[in-house]
Image (cartoon, rainbow, N blue to C red; front, side, top):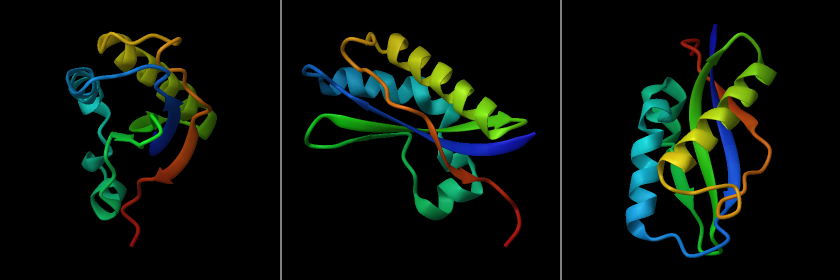
Length: 106
């Protein structure tokens, strides 16, 4: 198994308050990239929100292959959004992409 850091972009189509963002952050905590070598070095946050209501979820995923990691990241992102009270109409997601592979190689 390999540890991947996956980025999943999305857009909040309506107003999403600070409380909802905090719930989303808590829902993402188990997959927080700060637990990886890459996350520490790059200071990656699990949730980044831009002024235009676009956002990026950065998740760590253990998987055998890149495509499996991307699929699992989308599943995890959807679950975290639902846990925060958001659905696909309020926070549609874009395609998941591999943004890092955690490795102890220096």
